[in-house]
Image (cartoon, rainbow, N blue to C red; front, side):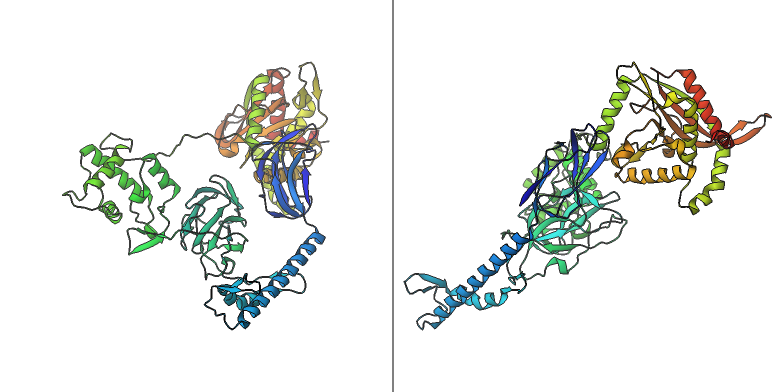
Length: 634
């Protein structure tokens, strides 16, 4: 039975959300509570779990589209125990009947004395065809392979049938759960050889090349170029050549010469499918000992292929010095350099190994300069299409490329929010510097005691607590303004947001009720929301209800900033890096101080310069002399 999953209410007033990523594909089996999709509302990233176990039959939206609340999101073929038992029973009966019919036909054919194994067709009693002799020869073996387990399991031993197998993407680095498919090096229906490169994938750490576990024919590529492939999920399926054991029982190393994680392994799982017919492998000469059987596509990394595209060069014409004739970047640059020099000098001489490649591809070398007329024309054509008419310049491959990328997910939310803030709020900025020498000493004194209680104590809890205490005397910093700018709404809780630079973009989770929390409680919350934000799994409630924001730009090395207010808030502060610089003390002596620059942005509709200066001064006094906070702690 197929059931639609109706997208529920995922936030007050939210009627639609953007589908950021599908975590499953059509046809995948899912378990109850398994994550199905990540969706982005105007306020948070939400993960949708599966309400029941089954098989995904349809995904109603594409990645990046807007899904409607109270409308179907996906459909699931729900597991039904009774239906499964009924189907298994029917299969058992059908196989038993088929096996009996095959045996009866075989006995009838063999008992006829005038029929031999060489006969192409055995005749029945009514003169019609009963069974072919080839089928009779296969009957004993076939009937031995088919068995019905008494419990309900159908076991088939048809080993010589060409059944596609899934290649399961292995662990390709510690902590890596997905990777981007940079380029498929093969296509569906193409024959492949064992250890032939199949795809280049990019992780957060390195470019990894995935080799074929065995020879066969590519059946299906499960991802398009540029999509994210999930670790431990099928990457592609292929039909192995006859006589090879299933890939689930063997391991093949993944090429991780560029990966810091070292060699990894893969496992494949069988997948039912149809027979595929493939063309024979093509023998391609290469710079090495002998020849190798590979697909007609040259072995090269995406960077090398990009250089080849930029200069309109056929990679198959460049002889590679790498393993198995792989074209390295130095090979490509050398080839391009010689083409440019030859074009400028009018001499079409190319490297010896390139000539060897031309010869191996069937071009004769009869002229005095080592190339035949067809070869000259071919090289000359590539030289004139390389796009350069300047001689004597070292070829430098293009690194930047012109492309268009759709703004999605967290970045789309940030774009809308910042556009709203910058276009509707008149900003003004106030800057000052804070001497945090005493605060650093206090933190060093309390750090070990906090860690003993499981909290990593940074300066942020002190900064937030001092901010909440100063807001108690300047509540307008913790207020909002209505849409028609006729009312100021003062908030009864100080919920301080903290800007976090996550992988998916800028997130601003907040800590609720800072005025009522201890330093250790604030420290624990800072640690929790930072880890959640950087992993992209922030709870929706952590992103809602913020009243003022702190941006620690100094963590990345910045000193000054002009932060943009996070509407509907009215103030934001950016913290610069702490610098050890000389200052004069009260006695006029030069002393070394730890100075942190702060930059405030305020909503000039309701906050004036005097207010922000006095408020910042009070906050600054708490940070420069932390003992003063004891006087105002409630």
